[in-house]
Every structure is written in C-alpha cells, then in structure tokens.
Image 1 (cartoon, rainbow, N blue to C red):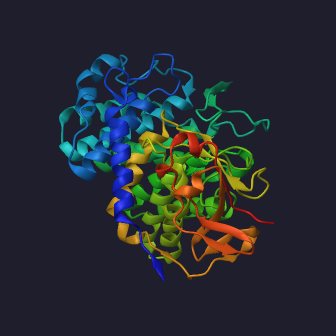
Image 2: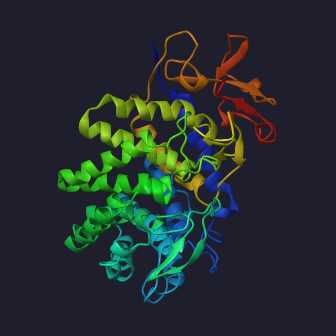
Image 3: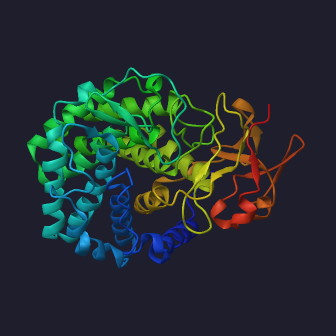
Length: 429
C-alpha cells in the first residue's frame, strides 16, 4: 500500500512558516540585519532573503521585507560590498559560510525578478570575498585535537595558519553551494576553477575523523549536483553520490531519518537545515539516476523526520538523536526553535517538497512489526510510544507486543507547553 503525501498537511506547514516569517519582528526590516558583533556575517541576511523568495515561488506572495532588504542593503555593506570585516590575511570560515547563503538569496532573487542590483551584488561578493581565497583550501586545518565543542549556533574558536576556524567544523565548504549558484547565473569560469579546488579538497577530507558538520556536507553535495546540472561533468555527480553514501551508511543519519549535527557525536542533536538538505539531495540524485533508493529516502525523511522538526509557531527546532551509541531511545525536543537558521531554511525545504510532492509516498504493509534496532514500523512509517500529552495528537494507534504505538506525532500540531514535556519512545530493546 502507498501512503501519499497529504497536500493539506503540506499547505498547513507552508502557511505556518509563511506567517512566522512575515509576522515576527525578528524577520522584519528593523531586525533582519544581524548585529555587528554577529560572527556569521551574511548568514541571517542570506537565509532570510532565500526564505522570502522561496515563499514567493510557492504562492506569488511577497513578504514585504524581501524588497525592503535590498533597498537598504548598500548601507549595510563594507567597502568591498559584503557583510562584516574586510577579509585580508586571515580567512574567516564562518564569513565564507554565511555568505554562501547571502549568494543563494541574491541568486534566487535575480532568477525570479531579473533585477540588476541582485546581479551586481552577487558578482561583487564573489569577486571581492571569494575569488581571493583561491589557492588556500588545501591548507584547511584537518589535524585537530578531538573536542566536543560547539553549540547549536557554532562559534569562532581560533586562528590556525590563515584560517579563523569555527566549531562547526568544515563550514567554509558550505560555500560550494552558493558559488555553484553564482556559476549557474554567470557562467564565470574563474568561479568554476575555485569550485573545483574546493570540491577536490573537501572530498578528500575524512569527514568522520574530523567530525565535520553534516549540514555543511550535504549542502556542499547539493552544490556539486548544481554543477553537474550545469556542466554534465560526471565528477560532480560522483562527488555528490559519495557524500550521500557516507551520510546514509556512514553514521550521519539517525534511525528516524534525522541527522547527527556532527559525525561521531551521537549525544548532540539534529538540525532541520540538514534534514532539508537530505531531502533535496536525495531527490536531485533520483532525478538524475532514476535510482529508487534515493526517492525512498526522501519520502522516509518527510514522513518521519519532518514529523518532529516543525513547531506549532511555524518555525523549526532540534531533537534528541536516536541512533547507535546515543544516550536516548526516544525523540524529545532539544531546542524549541532555531529561529536564527532553521526556521528560515525550512522555507526552501517546503518549497522544494511542494514542487516535487508526487515523489513523497511511502510503502506500508498494514501491520506494525518490530524491526532492526528494536524499532516498530509499518513499512516505511516508524511508530512510537508517546507520553507527556502529545499522544492526544496522534494519527491512530496500534496495540503491538503490549505497547500502544502510533506514527511519530507531528509536532507542528502540538502546543509548545505539551510538546516540550513529551517523549516519543522509538527503540524497544
């Protein structure tokens, strides 16, 4: 039997996220530009612009802040026409990472509206911030002392060589995504040369040993898929496939199709940004290869992981990890809302799923049985034992082996005070 994507549910999610972005002061023109001391320069601004354009692509509705941002943008830039300090000898990887989203937002706006300002600015950011970094990626520090440092937001942790490093290890390579979009718009061969250098270095890094951020890895792979779409060079496709395999089979994904925020840190949390990436990467690989396993993965992520990542206020937040060696056998909220990144990132994910919704169906068997790792499923749908009040919002129950189980409860339907005190037990061993 097939369990299809519920279009009503998808529209409810889209509307909740739209109003979170349209109505909250945090995403209005008076606050949408991050404070000067914020060390993810360009990140919030880029994610916000990308989110606004994503909702425009869904509904044709313009969140007013989208155009207001571009009107005041010149006053927010440095002399080199990007955000934050002017990069000279030291390369700040968080600045590169943040400006990847800045480039994405500008590219999306240009592709939708064809405006000269977005085009001029994305070219200036590329010319002044990114192209001068050509030749330094091979020196990215990979010999590090193993530490469990870094919070949900990531922080700058010190200078090694020419690099100001981040606790979100490897986030400099997030820019493979933004720069690939610049190449799609401009076809600037210098950008392709820079991308080839970055991709070669990043594919060679032992991501598990370095415990890099899975979000960055998946985002970089999406950039590789964009380069494949624009050049048809097989190396880009093979690079994206290798990252997908590492993520799914190498310990980047949990039993419930969430992500580990960093490889080999199963005691941390999931990140909706990466879960969005996992869906988009899987579908892009499916569209190119026709391999049904990619489509199945995307559908399982939607029907299981997306159940918990969106909140009743329309935003997105983090969860405990249910995976090998984690201290939890249950899903529970870790951070109610990562409003500074994941709420905005969710917008593009919802746009993408809406565009491809016919692919997001799962197989069910009509009976719930115990499978590997002590997890109960009906085909591709994971079942949980829910306590703390969220069980009132369950989509039906099954009595199995003395347990009262239901599909993972969709947290966007659950009031905050109930959700934060609820658990969804997944593993029964």
